[in-house]
Length: 323
Image (tube, rainbow, N blue to C red; front, top):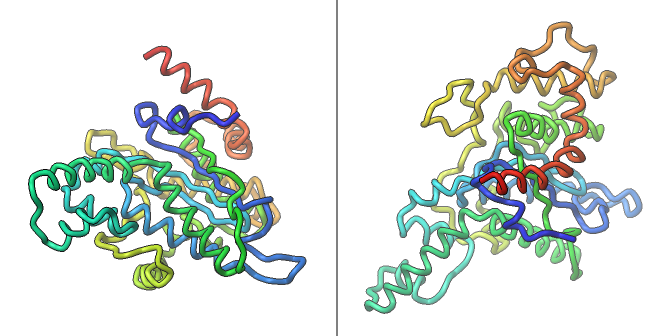
C-alpha cells in the first residue's frame, strides 16, 4: 500500500532524493511508437525544459536527470533554506509565474494599496506559497500536470498520461547519492539509446559537458502553452561539484566533477564493454575514497533501484526511532 509522502520525504533525514515518473502502461508516449510509426521524441524536450525552469523557481536543486522514452529520472536536493531567504515579493513573483493567485495577491503585485485585514491575509498567503515552493510534491505536480495536459491536447484525448504518482527514494549517504547519479546519467547508455554519456540527449551529464539549454526558447514555449506566466529569476545551474572541501559554506556535491566523470565513464565501460571499449587498468580515485572495490561499485550502480527501494524505508524508520 502506498505510504503518505511525508513519511518518505524528510529533509531532516536527507535532502537528496531519487525521483521516477513513468508514462501510463509504460508505452512509448515520449519516444517512438513502433506500431503506429509516430514519433513523440519532442515530448522529451518538453519535460527537460520544464524540469530546468521549475528548479529555478522552486527551492530544489538538480543533481542529475535523464528523460527516457517512457519515464524520467531525477536526483534532487531539497533546499528549504533557500526559500527562507526569499523576500515576500520574491515568493509572490515566483508563485505568480505558475498561478494567478487570489485577487488580493494580484492587486498587491499591481501596486494597489491594501487595508490591514487584506495585508494580514496576504502575509498568510505568502507563507503558504513559501512552503509550497520548497515542497517536493508541489514541484512534481507543477512538472507532471502540464506535461499530461499538453500531451492529451496534442493527441486530442483525455485520461491519464502518467502511470501513477511519482516514486521517491531517499539517498541517505554520499555513496547512495553518487551511485544514484551515475545510474541516472548512464540510463540512455544502458538502454542502447546512446553510445556514450556525452552523446546522450536530455541528460544532466550532457548538459554539464556541453551546455545547450536555450532559456529564451524554453520560456517562450511554456508561455505560449499557458503553463508559465512569467520567469522573474535567472536559470539555476545544475548542482555543482565542490570537491572534497568540507565546511559550512559548501552547498554542492562533495566530490570533484573530474572524479565523477571518471566514475561514470568507468562504470559505463564495464556495463557496456562493446560500446565503450575495455576496462581501464587504473581505477578512478573516487573508488578508493568510497572504500569500494570495482565489484562492489558495480553491484551498487547496477542494482540501485532494487537495493535502495528496499532499504530506504527501514533506514528512515530506524533513524526516527533513534532520534
